[in-house]
Length: 357
Image (cartoon, rainbow, N blue to C red; front, side):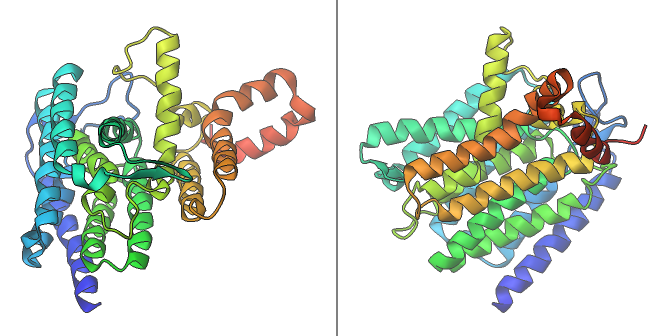
């Protein structure tokens, strides 16, 4: 217990110190995110949050000799691979084809490497023991989550705090499994991210960058696969539901882009946080609303193995109608049709969350 406390505190402090050093450093211009018509921020901001997180993580893993474990070594190798894809993208502004090709290669190599961990997959009462099918599903899942998480890195505090909810949920799950090594790794990640978030509050002193979003996105998707045990029922319903807010919003965005004949890899302003900002919500309320939706997914995940598949899907549908679909359509419906006389009540409620004019 004392070791867990020490590594948590050190992770936070080292992340803070590295973040401050990077923030004060004379960085290459390619690591400075400059404002443009699509972006929300108005001042040039360093893209070094991911560097602070991963350096803090690696330092603590080395200090506490956690790297000696073969599973941790596997995680470090692949997470660094995706980190460097993002870092080179930050530095050289790669086009999406080059970045996606490297993601394909890394994900394929990872899926082959952990094939013994995906011999059985299950979602609620549905399971599969076909290794070829399972490998395909995991391959698509990891690619999807990496890019979905990257899509959410659009406003201050959002991606980092979302990853905190995911990893804290994983932490609670593995606490009941009783795996001290996995708990240690998660605590290092969590407190390294908290250190970064001190610099990511509005007005942000640094952003996560593609390096950080790739590293965290890969970790979110792959962590349960790498640290699989006989007690975790990999890949269980729990890990899918926890991150489902990424899945539902990204699917909605991709469908919208296809319907408009837009390239699915080209950024736009159709994501959930953009829709809430379009309602003139304050940045902090946008983040809080999305985090609340994510928390509901996490709570549902803890009950996902105890309820029927039909009830699970019904609750999932209700949560996503409220948090993913309604912000896009409900305001216009109320404005246009004054649904059930709700316009007056809606206007009063919405004014509380909006930026003062």
